Image (cartoon, helix red, strand yellow):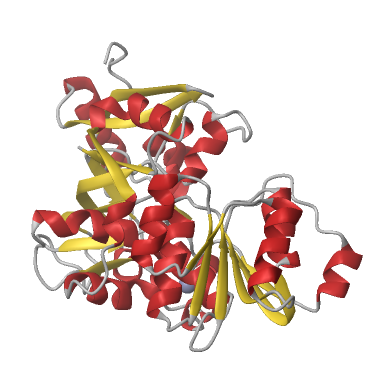
Length: 381
Ligand SMILES: [Zn+2]
């Protein structure tokens, strides 16, 4: 890549600005020393503006809290939600460190970390959470009262600081073989998010589940619906490779139409009633209305696409008689179960990664996802 140059880690700089109380003089002195000597330099992805993704040298992340861990990232990836700023739909504070999905080996833990140990292979969610507060205890770790967004720390990098390590990270039984890493990485977001979508839509035995969206989250919502025992699973996609994977993950029916025509197709498959459960995994006005209108009275919509410019009409919702639940997935709730399913090779969610690139080629990874040439790109630091 032609754009590499030395750059102070934006994530750490942001954290410094946001958390002045975390800074002891010893920390500042050590960081300054490292910056001056350019030791322990790591590579990380930084977005400068829409369409402008660079891989830069950054100063390695420092322990800020006694509850932190530092992990060496085995694999990271580009998320569909990273495409919103890439396409200029969402503004970030430029330059922004990128990446919130990660799996890797623990290098160092703070003095108050009890369960996570150096040398363990761990997976965490895109929200760091204490897993002990009232919201966490009822399974809504993405609303943890102490949550920290991992995206601000930049997981598309060699090394990553993970706050609240005991609450956030889940260790695998052993260091996994390489072929399991993509699936374990998927649990960090897309699998956990698709799973939450299916759970929020109440997918289960005897149910017909429709999934709006054929990105990684939608495809893994199909996988989740199958695991949860759904009888019939309708994937909505018009792309051959995605349709094939949806079939492999358990889709029994495929619908190509979108919008009102897509709703009509779902109704035709369900005696005019609509699906019991609909997962919305896109985040646009069309996909949200498609999901609500394709749900039968009394049915459930699980929406996990990050909503951009979506406005739901009150009368539409009123007459739908649907339950609507969604939001940022509490992935941490599902991690132990998902890691277990992956470890025992009962599911293979890692197949959503249809392109793997070195971290240094991150710009090409974003381009491939933006052009829909790849479903999801895995980045190897
Ligand atoms: Zn919490």
